Image (cartoon, rainbow, N blue to C red):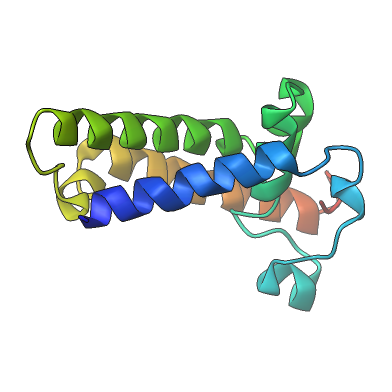
Length: 132
């Protein structure tokens, strides 16, 4: 199995788990983020689990409120899985994950992700928004 296929499989597993978790109690769960547990402040990834759970239960508004990148990452997982399966069905090895990660689109999305996290952190620290 290639690194692309392993990553796609892990991502699909995360999507399945998000679909199985109840959306009703997701806000009451424990804080899993070490940065947030230590500082009380959100990291760029804070809210992704909740975002995925809400999205998998059809609540797009709550998904976006939890983390704007939740839907983007689910879309990326689905695309990666489809590309991997299509490659194998065609008898080819999927593209190497290192090459995919270094593409301009992925690097641009990563820059947006970090910027989003920094802005969210600044807004939280200045009291403009409540901590997640």
